[in-house]
Length: 407
Image (cartoon, rainbow, N blue to C red; front, side):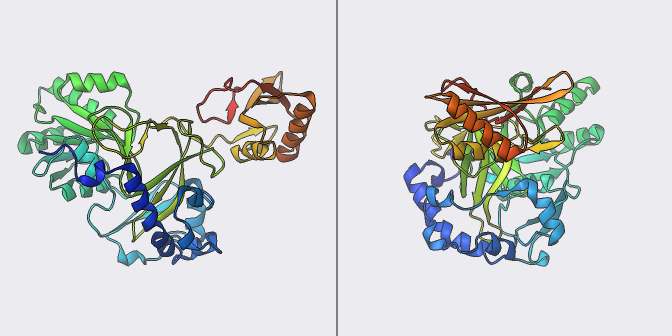
């Protein structure tokens, strides 16, 4: 049996890039049929957005802004052209954010992730993600059924009932959080129940540290992780190569400087921004608020799409200094006004009972005049006084953080 779901996964990267950007103008037209996108992209000619550089000029849509948009124009914030009744299922996530499920096959893009984790048609899968109001359970349920698997819609909790289902149906696969998989295995061992049929797992929704990966593996389960959201479904997934996560097909993924829409150099840590080519519900430059970095090269598993290092923290580093909010966007603006600077980091500390800001900036040609100019820009943008420290290039860590609160 093939190691890849289809030939799209192994095509030359240039071929994939050409295909994605050939399809993008039509997706932009479809998105602009919705009133909020029509307003956001006003004056944009979709026919001209055929490269990453052109895409990077479009505004980002921050996921953190979705609750306010959905409240102002329910249910979907004017970002969806279809009526609620044209979708298959309707969900909510904390915020609240309202998510529709398209009716076409594999609407959450999970088939490839399951296939890479070893799931195959005819497998029985125990799905322990929640089916209550939020889309998590249905993301993995719909994906497994699109692959040809039978799904036990177990949801989380109630281990005794889960043992009954496992011993009756003998599922070979598990989908759910890694934490609940460990709970299930521990409880089965304590109760003397047989869950040995479960041989592989696709986990998401929580951290999956190496120690937990090794423990689960020692107990006979090959577990792979996936990164996804309730808006987009599965964005990237682990493969047998165990080297980062491969970006899903049909998505354009960018890594941008937090607080901006500007792509970072390859390998730098930044915020994940995704454009999806779903004709029913496209997303245009949705900034997820999660940090990652591109992993260079091609995966040994043969899949040729971009790889990311996985989840590396949150991009929203807004903090309050002396009662005033300071945001990553303001620090990014300092970099734009002083292009001779490289990486920037605002460090917030306390001196006695007073908040103190220090802006650290990488620079090849430091001077007192430049330091004074930057201090003035910092004060103008934040309305707060702060010190400026110019450091040599490479001195600041590449972790995607632009504000560090050390109080």
